[in-house]
Length: 132
Image 1 (tube, rainbow, N blue to C red):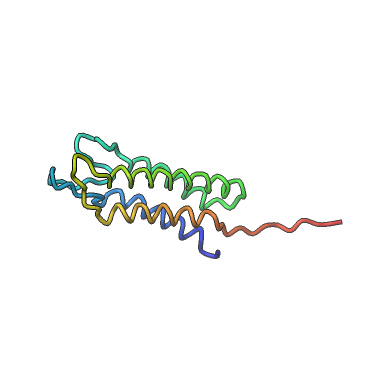
Image 2: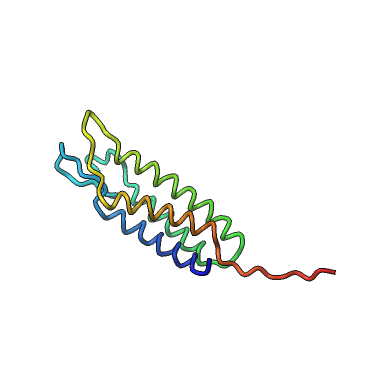
């Protein structure tokens, strides 16, 4: 795909920005949780992990070498797995209370899926080798 690298970089930036949006609303606490805030840090701070993984992926999206594209697939797979884990943890019910899923949670998951998809279709110009 012609623009897969740019779309992947944009998805990585959107993933970082999504960490600042509200992910879930917990009615018993009357608070919104984000990628950087949970009550008593119960779910950790996945936003920090997404910043690191996205920065590494942006570098690999930008480098036009085959080894970088292979490592990018691996990094995007790790990012997607962590996004799925975070989605399950944040949206799971506890003590009979189910939090309301907010837009940030869906944006985070969709950005990670888009990053993975774009890492599978790198825009690489392969050099032709001479055949004798």
